[in-house]
Length: 142
Ligand code: DQA
Image 1 (cartoon, rainbow, N blue to C red):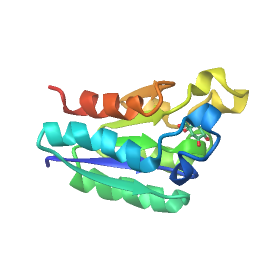
Image 2: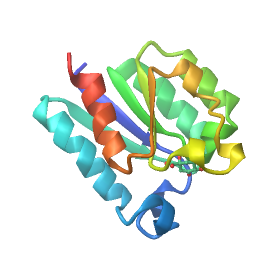
Image 3: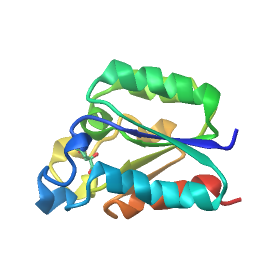
Image 4: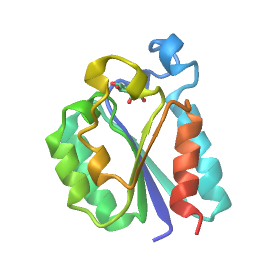
């Protein structure tokens, strides 16, 4: 399965205009392009998905567990609250790398805990949209 899945959660469709002091000026389209450079280099396909809905993200994780060899996930605010997304990750056999544009550990206390980290292969925080690129490299480099 030469295919990676990129999943972005709530409000990340607003990247570029959303709190630029925290998230920068890059758009979600830029994020996808950043990852696609890497997947193209490795001869992999990329599917990207964004949703503001928790259940839709669970559905996509389950699907990706059958159709992809790795998943890059920024679950946004659901990172801090969602047992359903945590359980979906635990239920699938493919590695998931958790990415956050900002450093969640230096922000408000409610962002310090990730419900997802313990079932993800790795967590990349605070590197802006480059974090997505590094996640793709980590999934694809042998
Ligand atoms: C985020 C960090 C989360 O705490 C926040 O709710 C987001 C974006 C990030 O990429 O830095 O929506 O996941």
